[in-house]
Image (cartoon, rainbow, N blue to C red):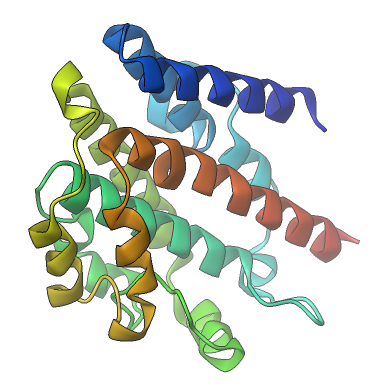
Length: 223
C-alpha cells in the first residue's frame, strides 16, 4: 500500500482508541481533523499535507470522471457525490442537528435530479447521473461539506462523543429526501452509532474506502 495511505490507516486505529477512551478530547478532535483533511482536497486544510482526493482528481479528464468502465458499477463522479451526500447528511443533520449544506442552493448548481445519498441506484441511473452532473460544482460542494464537518466537530464537547443519534434527526433525513425509503437500512445502521462511531465512519473511513475504489477506477481509465 502507498505509504501515505498506510499511515492514514495506522492513525485511524489511534483515533478509534482515543474516541473509545474519552480521555483526551482535544487529541481525538485534532487527529480527526488530520484524518478528515487527508480524504478531502489539500485546499480544505490549507496545510499542504497529502490529499487522497487530490490524488484521485490529478490530471483526470471530465470524460474519465464520468465513465463507468466495462463490468464496473460506479463512476468517479458518482463516488464523489455519494461521499459528499453521506457526509453532509450524517455530520450536519445527525451530528450537529443543523441544515444540510446541500440545501443552500446546491440542488440547482449540481444539475442532477437526485437529492439522496445514491444508495441503491441502478446502473442506468448511475450512468445518466454521471453524464449530467456539473463536475466543478461537485468538487465545490464536497469542499463545502468538508468545511461544515470541521466546524461541527470542533463544536463538540467531550460529553457529546458518547451520545447516540437522535431518532428525530434520523427521521429528518427521510423527510428531506436525503435517504430514500428503500434505503432505510442506512438509518438503522446510523441509529445504532454513537457520535464517536459516526466520526469513525462517514467522514473518515467511508471516504477512505470509496476513494480507494475511485483510485482503482482511475487506474483502469488511464490505461
